[in-house]
Image (tube, helix red, strand yellow):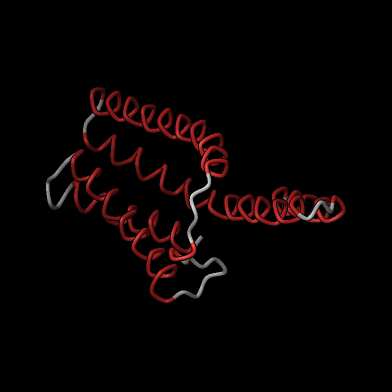
Length: 160
């Protein structure tokens, strides 16, 4: 969540700077987006591989190739990739329409509004990601009782 908030917050700050004072226009909005999320990515890489202070650790030396696991990853990843592609295509079309109808000001307002919306949604994304992790562990344990508790607790939090 911290990395996602950093990316969105940095984007809100950099968008108007790159669009107006630096005069990059729509390209400035794109550049601000890349810089913001690259910063978030570097922060996560630092947590995973340098500081190693997360609950997940990576040990590439113990990696063993397994076709079944790769197939499972693709079964989940391919639909998710199509969803992300559709969202990116929609954003591209929306930016084109806004830039055609108005100017870079319209694109800046639109991008900033989406960043603010992104910050508002971050807690819900964090809750859903934690639910997936906890439920997956309980399901792997074949303990259906443990599945109910986090589900109902997360539903209460989301509605609050």
